Image (tube, rainbow, N blue to C red; front, side, top):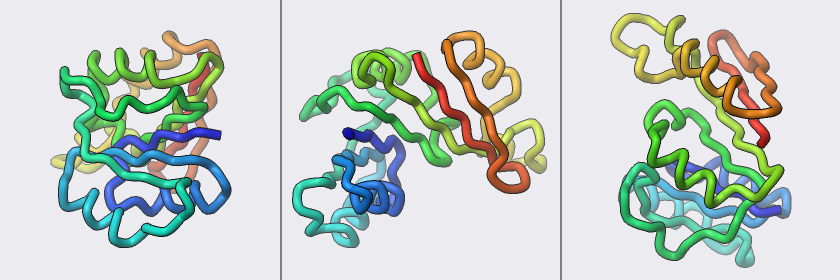
Length: 149
């Protein structure tokens, strides 16, 4: 299984996923995060790599990722959600592939940090745009959202 971890940060989820035998590419716009991920998680036998990349950028991803079965956005979707990301997602995700989002619900976040979550209105838009949608509670205000073609 091939996985693209968008907004991978220091690579904890990417590394755990690679440990399960999946081939994972982690991307982040932060050079320091990518450097930390590479330092902390090297030596996984070709199952894991990290690239500096802004998924909302207009330029192409180099090297272009092979189509993936799963795109994960753990606590990053609210920062990358854009028309450009959705265009990229359409190219990266295999038919029948899954977008999995882990996020807080912005409408339930304290004043000043609502940007660290997905708005209920945006969640409704996603429900309308995907055939299969599963939303489940993870902890307090944290939800998992699985979307498939």
